[in-house]
Image (cartoon, rainbow, N blue to C red; front, side):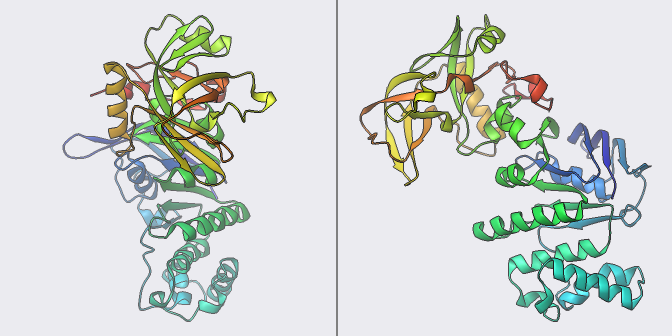
Length: 401
């Protein structure tokens, strides 16, 4: 096992476009690091530079105590698991797992022990004589993982390994990968565009946009203290609501009325003029159902346009008007998030017991302590707790094109 250090990594192609732009990430020995972001953000390119499949334009890639920029992939002792499994269809499961050991001319007795130990770990014992074509998608992915395990590599690299699986199987494989990594204690770098995988698997998560590192933090820190609009909009499902806002004293004025916020948040954003307020859907509640402990929040009345009842929760949709500055920033954010809709409507997640109806006015409670305030011109979170937000960068990249 080994730590992986990326110092000011840059990857430029022939036209000078920086697919990865000055990224620095330290992956500790045994850590599970997630690289996440929308398509084209540079996450897979960065992973391929770690393993040696892409040349590094500038910067230093260090694995353990070795600078590996000029080393071939086979000299880096890394095991990579691909999205498409990369199995040999004419070989049995046993021989697919054993393949890297055969290349290394490992003695047959040791090969057999390592393959059977990996098969036991991955529950593949009864499939060792089958061919990949006779396996399910999840089983094939486990074979690919088995091949990585037997190499006894310094680190595992996963390139969107669950993308080809259905939703139920993805959930099962997430759990298997997490348990396996904890059991082996091996340094792991995992690329995904799926924020659910990022939030459930990673010790820390690096959020990338257009080749620039936006924020590096634990999943909880990303959720509670997003450094900018992009991170706030990318992390969370449904995504965070963004509304025009101005700060007046210790409250923030929203399209639906004023909401009291903590004094320190109001002070950080005071005198900034028009802002964008960010509030997650789950930080609202039907005022009639808000508990006594939650009465410290604020309530407002709004016309509900649509309601979706899902049994355990209810989603209510409330339209609002946004000035051009805010609408333009939301339009740009929608492009950055691969088309994730950033409409001028408030989405609130309520208890399933709520009797709110579409076409009627409803009284909604909101937790003012959870409101974030962003600068519309840069996307910077003005109210973030920088001590607990991890490493933040790339805020300037939020400026609309």
